[in-house]
Image (cartoon, rainbow, N blue to C red; front, side):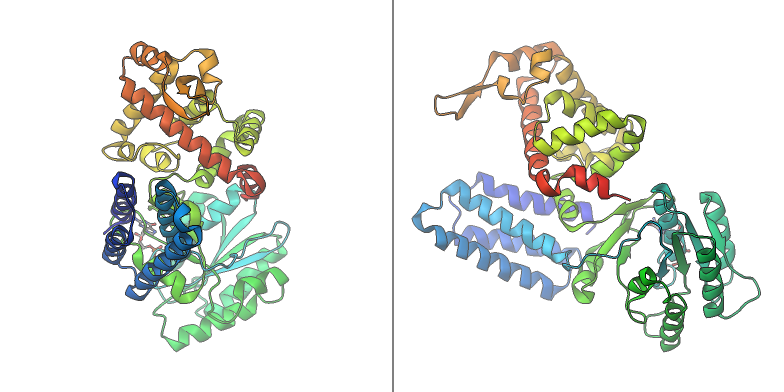
Length: 448
Ligand code: GDP
């Protein structure tokens, strides 16, 4: 099962709770059965799945019992949903901070992996990624095993305007790696990516080769961190996550090796590389959006209008994003490229937006813009509460006349307007949660 199917199944299982009046042990069992079946279908290791089931059960039980009779039904649902969410995050989070290149140093990164998995392509993608973020980047082709490897590096590096080093005559990969690293260090390159032949994992010769290549770069403090021990890789990049990849095997690899995933390869183009972090990944998988990922994309826009983006980030951090701001984000996103890719990052956007073609997705997004076009200035600058009627105790009890006016004005239905408001609220809440100390602003500043 591909990941988007897994996400849909998990989402369906978790949302089904909202329709069930009483959450008891039987309901929990049924839910866990559905969740686990979906995970297994995606090739996630059986042991991990059964551990997840056990942990969710224990967590939920403890939470229910600690609250005694007082745990209200709505809270019980939240407890179950949160426990599943957290355990899914734990599945892809080894709890280790991955190595991050530092500015002003020569950071050496060695790529290892099975042949044909996209290593050479990924090396260039990685170089492009860092180059875009201001690191002077380079690639060393130390793959002397595969004929044509250096040509491939040369071609893609030239296309990407990244410096490269390799040899048609030298047959010893260690020598090439040492020469390349030394050359680029001398030239003050900040990211030096060494591409190796990466044959089968169990080939001891390869291990030895990697160990020696590793030694070649141990002089610098930053490098030794990257190399850790011989052949002990510090981070994982999962390639070919587009198309029909199951992805579950990769998720299992995190747990097996206790090594963090740092990027996902999502296509053959040089920009098809997405940063990976556990919580946003699960959030996006479940159709809850990926605030952090979205922010990274927004960075491109930030360079065009830095003041406005700073203002926006501040509002987000303070949880003060108005409907108008949200509309601006949607419009920005529409200019950013394939809707299907970007839309899955926006919290609160309906899942069906991601289905169908990109044109259909764009149309649906346009409809959301039409709805906001029919709102008054006061409404756009609000947090949506103008559309709600509240009881004396502050509980929302219905919608105001404004909703039907907007529906009429935009040629949509009351239901559609209501849905949009609901999505906006969800987004605003997510942003608020993501805000504070570890908020977007910081996430944005941290992005290199
Ligand atoms: P290597 O042998 O590990 O160096 O693999 P290559 O970099 O030569 O890649 C093998 C094939 O996989 C090439 O056709 C690449 O275009 C393709 N490829 C690499 N990464 C991705 C990816 O993320 N998605 C898709 N669809 N194809 C990829």
